[in-house]
Image (cartoon, rainbow, N blue to C red; front, side, top):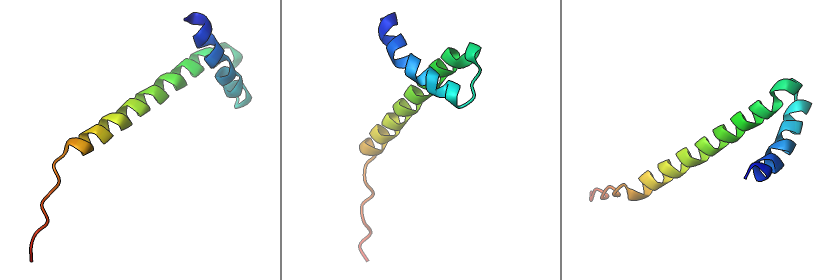
Length: 62
């Protein structure tokens, strides 16, 4: 599990280092970015599921 996580975090950490993240903090920043990305994906899925379950308003007949 650790090797798989490292395989995904290393390129992300290198990209963050190119953007100016200090060497000591690049793996922590990569983990934080991964966590934020996963959180946003889950929130978007929840919003989409809630919208799908909401009953549609009947159209008013003039």
